[in-house]
Image (spheres, rainbow, N blue to C red):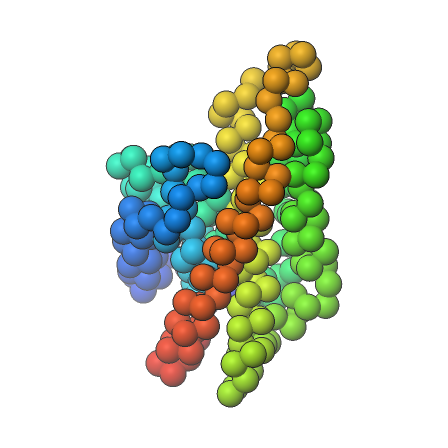
Length: 240
């Protein structure tokens, strides 16, 4: 069976969403590696499996599963609300790309980028524009022909290189998409809207400009390794 961009809330889908939500809760408490430059904070396994859930369940059912699981993890102190937003967004994006709904992803990517980069007085464009360089790279990849081929490459039989490349492209764009969503929520929570420019100038994105690309590449690579093996297994079981 394969899930696309449409789904109904029947017993089967509710069971699937609940099962993946439970997996997401558990993975939210498994730390993967520390956040560079932020002592005591960790990237969790949930950040890696979020885009894979989107590929398996689709953008809407997958996002519903991550929303449920993420809300439970948030309530139990696994992470902050910005991490929940990042997980939901990453799942939604990967589900769209895997199901060949690239135009929706492009439009929503631009909206997120604008909100995050130009957030009044605190957005990275105002203090250190170089921060958004990898988001621009991901967008260039998103609008390129490569994303059209990515989902097809995932299904390419007996071609491990194409399988790996297809999953990596989808996951890479999705984790950057999620990073923007999480960063935008972070800005909205911690920074007053339309704060005085003098006050806002005390904050700079310079510290994270070269930090998050390393994290996102590690996450994308790890998710791809897991995703290729998982998708192959699910295809053999006729789940995909």
